[in-house]
Length: 149
Image 1: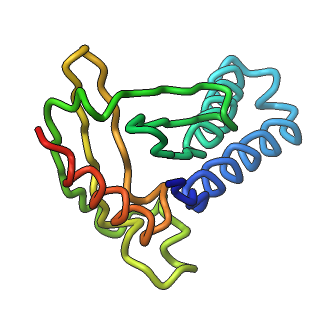
Image 2 (image 1 turned 45 degrees about the vertical axis):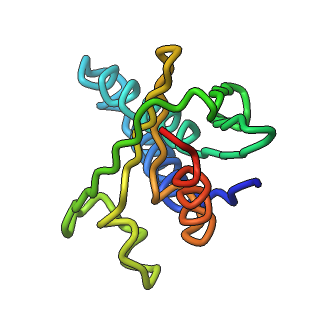
């Protein structure tokens, strides 16, 4: 089972990072000021975090595979060794940084679930509802519920 990614949050962060870079590039005073280095670091960090939030999940042969940063970073965990599953609900309210919730008619970007998985071999994995297609998230949760803890 492959879960379709929802890249809305990642796209928002990438666009925000590009906006910061454009502001730095066109501001001569910011480039010459020591605060400009902080601004540049903030924009690059925002861009990298946006690319990091492009997450893909896959369950293959009782293995949960999580890929970040276009598949450059891969984390694999054996679902047979699942020790604990903890589900937390997050409510961010009306945060000004979640612009995507203004354009999409869904509440999943402000109120989402975060699932922390702990395995017997010490591995930990976190799954965020707002980075996966809603239907695939619930399908993934259904498959995780069938696993005996």
